[in-house]
View 1 (cartoon, rainbow, N blue to C red):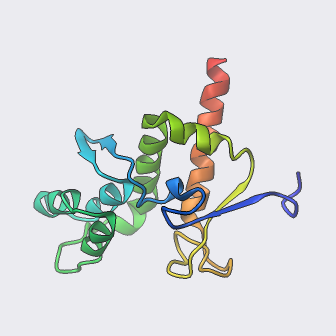
View 2: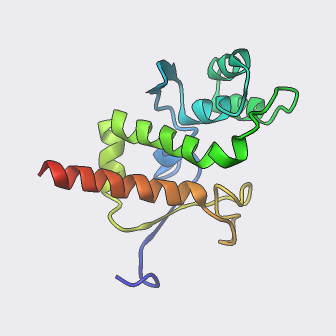
Length: 156
């Protein structure tokens, strides 16, 4: 299938079709010896040097609150954050899609579709609303999908 005819799946809001792909979706993950309410909680917490700050984010009542806390520059950001943020997001997504069988099945069922976080609120993780963004979240989801497919094929 050529890229021009490739199916595109756009996601953003938790309540929409494929909303499960959102980092705000209520699928807890277990990582680094702890339980995290959402991948958003995990990702935002990892921005900080201080354990207390990470725990505050982990305890946030909602993923939106966790996201706001993650943007709070009164908290000390890790020096290496820009260089590790993509691998931290991948770690969170791998946990989410391996720890929830229904999510793994949903992601694999997308086949070779292009996955796009469609939002004008973000041109790094999303598509910027007009396709000009980097869509890093979509790219990572496709990479995780490929890894899950390969693992499934190896198991036979």
